[in-house]
Length: 82
Image (cartoon, rainbow, N blue to C red; front, side, top):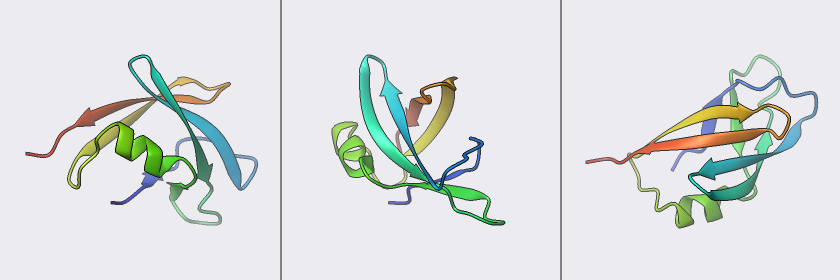
């Protein structure tokens, strides 16, 4: 299961803690900067727990909406694969 996202946060550090939110549940996840000219960042620590508890399956689509830039907190909208 891929855990890369297009760059959308202006990260000053190589790694940053973010919160992923679905309804009233939140998960701390580390976002690692792809660096250089790479156009993607990668979720690392915490992603597996998020994926398990939110019941992600191969083929599901996640849309990440930045709802609090100070946190940062990303609201996750999941479209289940058919």
